[in-house]
Length: 226
Picture 1 (cartoon, rainbow, N blue to C red):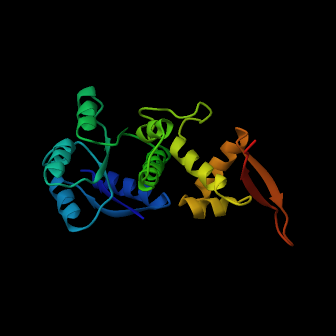
Picture 2: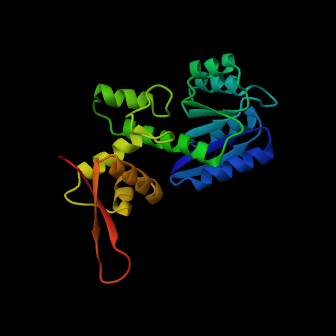
């Protein structure tokens, strides 16, 4: 599970964002904080993978907190989640190492896309080894900030996640169900199904049906090597 700390000065908003995080498979809420001091206390007490960080906090700004964390040797990943829209703040967030910047107000789908992109980024980096230029471009553009990925990917889809599904299918000895792809990739079944359908429409994946003794036929997917 990817542990997420939600930091927002508004307790109601923090609760909503935490509920959003909990709905995304593979993510868990490590805690909520409403000041920079509370956030730092939680980060020093337990491992946290990702901070969803508001900029406007009562004791110091979110960017001040990020700078302080780096000075203290904390390398926790940060996604800014804030109403601050001025270019100076956005640029400062980039320079302080924030992975992404999500402007309030946003929908659950908007946050889910960012979180799924982050999860795909962690999987890509966790494989180690060497990367071709195309994969490097997609790693740097995991959230759609640098490289949009293949032109046939609709808005809101991650090229890294599509690559992950592709590699699972290419490494399989035969057709796989959406659940099997999900199990092998670490994705949720819903996300795996969404990308399988996308790749099928793009002509990258072939779908067949397997009929059992009872119930509806099972959809099976195989990478089209032609």
